[in-house]
Image 1: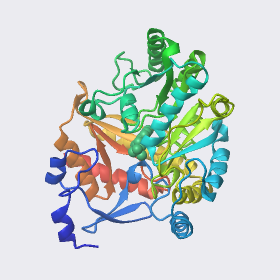
Image 2: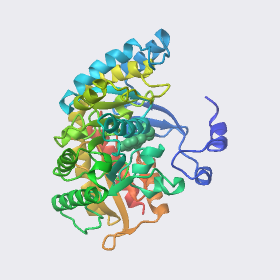
Image 3: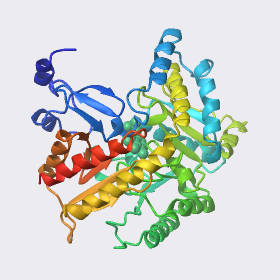
Length: 450
Ligand SMILES: Cc1ncc(COP(=O)(O)O)c(C=O)c1O
């Protein structure tokens, strides 16, 4: 490794960071992470802290998962790359597909289409949804519905269905034919409704209204996260996703569950869709599929959707889509080892138990600090604190104040993520109760510093 002086002098000098202003990264250089072990990360100055971010919602099994590391190393030795475009495949990807088929059987998903990450999986879902309707003789179904506050990655398709202006405005015009429904976000919503069940019904009515306005026969798919993640961890009322499923079914609209963060246990259930008792038509996955150790993803496809493609005799089902790294053998080997460890460790159960402790601790912090306007969580290891400068008016907090909370929390032993007015927590699912306390104590110090 280069000396710490070299790293600090050149930090953010010759690279631009995603989701950051280049000048800001130069003025406030990012933390240089140089090592990690278990659920802890170490920086260039020797700070050793609990990672409350879990990499980026992806390192579910922590940083020391040897079976995945070994699978990657062994696969690099055996077959470091080969394409699975028409005519060739590899052994790992065949085996992985059978494992995923078993894992996702309760969700009704029986085929996989491999990608290099979450944005790719979303893009693949949006494309295959249109193609599905074309095969079925409804080429006019091209539009998409999605939720405001939803996050679906940053490809043009995903950005077009994204529900947050931060990821849209600079890149407009986006794709035509994308329409947004109010999110079931009790803290702020256009109906001024704080009751989660009533709000869910109002959002469902808004969805029905939009479908009537657009014409059901023009809509290909509705895409949603079972629990909105990057938009600030917004768990809907349990009636919401089943309600969306019902509306989609009645109108012949495909339901895409974007489970890039919720698949593989984060919500306390193996998938977010299963958490709400819903079977989607398509499910985008990535991130924890390899524990973040290799860029990889899979779009999972329902049996009935697969049948439409596989029974086609016109040629319309030929898939003109795919990535050089679709089904990468090293990624597939990583995913196989990761899936085995994920199931063996029953990380969904630990996510539920530790998630309840974390959520309870955050609610206690909200009683202590007025700057915490809303606490969201209660479904596994995904929680958020929304900060405000005034609880009555819910007016936004200054950026330097929220940065100060983050900095002091870090100094006190926990890495947390700031996104807009939210502090987001998405730690590894192998967290212990002691680790939960480290995060809560560090946050307490962070808020006390204001
Ligand atoms: C729900 C959801 N969809 C899509 C994405 C995009 O994934 P990636 O960053 O791997 O492209 C993310 C990333 O956080 C996500 O949370």
